[in-house]
Length: 70
Image (tube, rainbow, N blue to C red; front, top):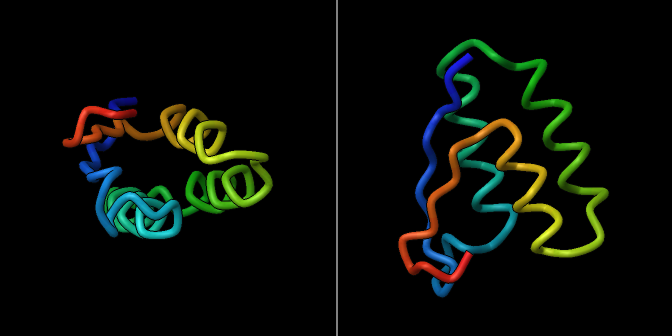
């Protein structure tokens, strides 16, 4: 299944992990993939670091940092 694309800017407010997660939620819900979001939310909130959370998100979402840091 094709991954939804979500853009964020790591050096701005949109780089906050919860802001990213909200955008991911909207992208997955738009495609009717609520179960995937529930699992993703749990994985992200239990991640030990920002980088680990981004890795978990990238399993389901094509996550693009427009600032080019991550």
